[in-house]
Length: 481
Image 1 (cartoon, rainbow, N blue to C red):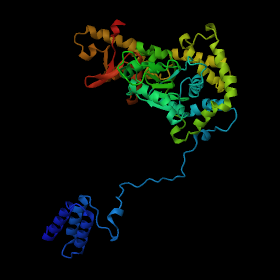
Image 2 (spheres, helix red, strand yellow; image 1 turned 120 degrees about the vertical axis):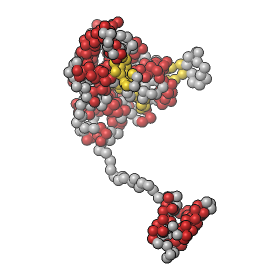
Image 3 (cartoon, helix red, strand yellow; image 1 turned 120 degrees about the horizontal axis):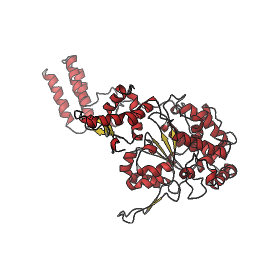
Image 4 (cartoon, rainbow, N blue to C red; image 1 turned 60 degrees about the horizontal axis):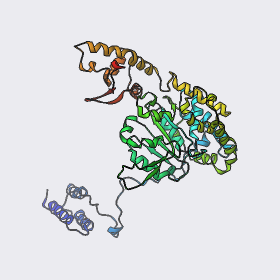
């Protein structure tokens, strides 16, 4: 390196620590360097590289440009995308005219016959689609008293089966400030506070508990479990315990329409604390499939306008004539007039959605709606799970028939491995896969684990860490069952 080159570099270094007008001074040094004929091109490049390495911009060709007027160079462009581009209106694109007359019946039937079959694949669709629509259009404020209950829809199925897709479709009917979403990690206190802050004194409102995990909720929610059970206005007032030291609020209002999505079947969860929730739930089952279209590719803002029309002031004559009459008729039914398939303890939670379906033309009459719900409860009790598959049948057979034999054999085999000794209580994930492959002849694929986790939960197993790997744990040995 020549003495001249070294001199320029020292000048630049000295200027960096000089404080004010660094850029101007360095620009002058670089101009002087550029005019110096004794420097080679390589030496000039070396000096310029020193400047760029310390993020000092090179000299500008505009000698009159002041330092204050210069703007920092963008790493990325400003994304001014075409303002004229708009997503097509999904409602219009799929054949619904929101300006039609008899809006409730026309929209309800369109959801049932066109919308749901396009975007969500459901087993037993003949009965599940109509019930799903009645839950999509339910208005939590349109009840006859503060004691009238609304159900807790529970969307059950594997990951990617359409549960969240349907919950998004329901949320689309609400303005953003009247729809909340909760995740498994949310604590009971935060859930309670958000519901109260968002919905106290408000109108129609919705909260979606996505990916509901019973085991996590028990730990996180603690005594706020009652918040989920608040299915009517009267029960939604949560008052501070007399033993509490909290000097803040004395009560919280948490009433809203609550929807849960999950891979865990509470009917078989075996947790006593969730029995009351199950009583208040209406379960819909989902299956994996390829939808005809994706909702994300369309704008669904019109759904908000339609929902507001259906339950708006202009429709009050029809709401009273059709919807309110259906509520009165069902409240007056005697127990022997309710089909045996509908559990008596769950009938109160069927009244509002049946009335909604009657008002929105989803079924032809109240009697037809009751028959749909009776058929649905019969379906839920049957061995035709919406998440059922060949894997479901194989795993059920293994757990109920083969695993007890393996466990009994291992308990009498003094040379059995430690894993085998505990096979009926703790089942390592890899061991279960191997058993299903070798003993049952079912090749477990990478995508089967979600369904296995859900099905094992139905048998009372939780999915958790076993040493350095994951596996399934049951509190009680099969030997004692």
